[in-house]
Image 1 (tube, helix red, strand yellow):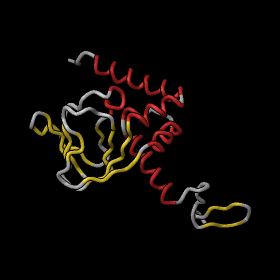
Image 2 (spheres, rainbow, N blue to C red; image 1 turned 90 degrees about the vertical axis):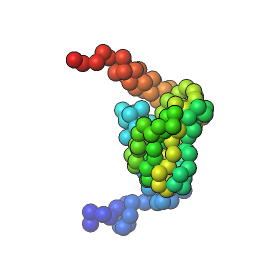
Image 3 (spheres, rainbow, N blue to C red; image 1 turned 180 degrees about the vertical axis):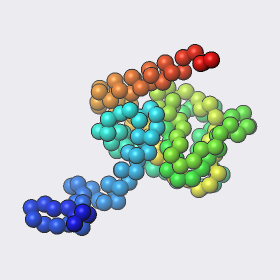
Image 4 (cartoon, rainbow, N blue to C red; image 1 turned 30 degrees about the vertical axis):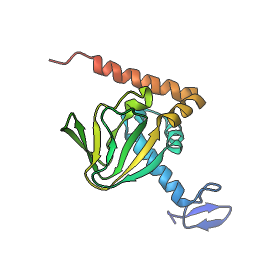
Length: 166
């Protein structure tokens, strides 16, 4: 059977979970890993690094009309939209609309500077969250992860500095 797992002659209908890890917890972790892997800051990281960050992440839900981040407020959390949609507002004008799979707040992981825009839910929404504190702990614990993130940031800066084609 293609959906069975075999171990020492015993057949299981589902893959066994890790020690002390429920199937629901494993699925939730996999969802967070996939969400992080879509964000450009983490997309080039090896799977083990993404998994390490996913373990430090959480999930939060917000009702429609809730301000998730406020323009001018100190930033310390990165968000990936798991479900729902939001609008990005700068100086009272809607400058973008984001939905499942999109992300915001990545720069706050690195610099903690004030938010450049507000983000408001337009529907009930679920978000993956990664705090700057957890992110820094992961970087401190794994120098290879720190180097990869620095390389990715340097690449993004170089891309921004390229002269426009034309």
